[in-house]
Length: 446
Image 1 (cartoon, rainbow, N blue to C red):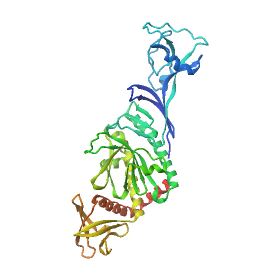
Image 2 (cartoon, rainbow, N blue to C red):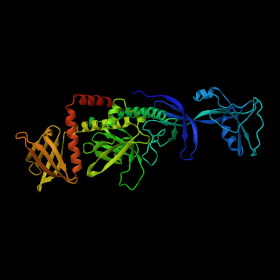
Image 3 (cartoon, rainbow, N blue to C red):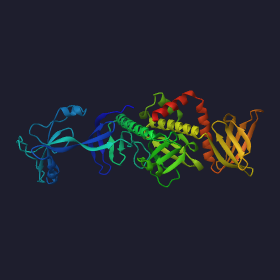
Image 4 (cartoon, helix red, strand yellow):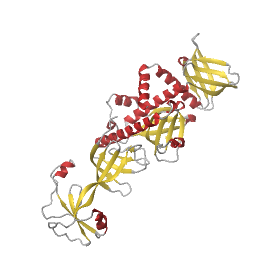
């Protein structure tokens, strides 16, 4: 882990007031601080009087500005900004100038008199960067997704803390600068999440380890009445995929998930084409190479034909979720070893057992008498009606003939997903590189 620290300038768009402010960002390992330019009393008065003076100043506040050559350099702006001549004053307030403030209870529009040299006791007001909000990054969410829609902003994003505190919309000059900041903030959030996972896993059994967790944006299904997208917190832990409305903080929170699914009975489907993933792994694909507003999506296919579609902000997030899901399913299949489902064939009640070691075994439910048995390698194909029935095609090891077995299940989708998960885990188990990666990842998580 390598946490990032950054500092820079951005624009803050307040969604409630529709106002835009110049802000300075300061990023540390655990906190993102947003600073706004504000007027403070630096000489001749109690700083606590600032608010009182501004409230009682009348309808008009006149600000006298003085140009500082160092400020454009600090803000990385070109020199040559207009400079007011000595003795001139302006009503314009700008973050590029260090300002003195003179309060006037008079609402007339006449030009103010030229300021004289302030006396030692005269109050002096200056603009300074003051902390507007400091967001703890543990379990925070940084996202480019627009509210309600599933569209991505090209050069802005929002950061929300665990308690709901928000930075509002942070806007940057270019999409590249926005992406750089988003990656830095997301990296620190991921590091803190991983540290939290390791701490939780230290006190949990090997069968209840957290593999990965984080924020996603859930997109509505085509047949859903509600058009809005919502943010959800996903977690891959032990035998289950958890979907939360907010991150679990205490142990009891894990029992209040919005939805839970058994890992080996669901499938993850990445919506992006394989060539995009390949280019990213090779370092040839960057997030900004894709079209603006194009989301990175994956679906979780569950039983009875249902599914959830989620979006993430960056290609790297998509890759992490895909790899983490594969690892979690592999670990769970190895842990359970086998799974048995009730089924029927030609009016008889049967049991189909999917075993990581031996493959497929079908037996009578009452007598447990084994009717047939095949290895995973003998399965050559399958077809189903999309409802309850499936035809499995096996190659007989002795006569090399294809034998068809037709079975009927109550939740056919879950059975097919389970078969897929066990077969994928079986193939992965003979890949030494994959097995080594799982071993390293397990030690890293714990």
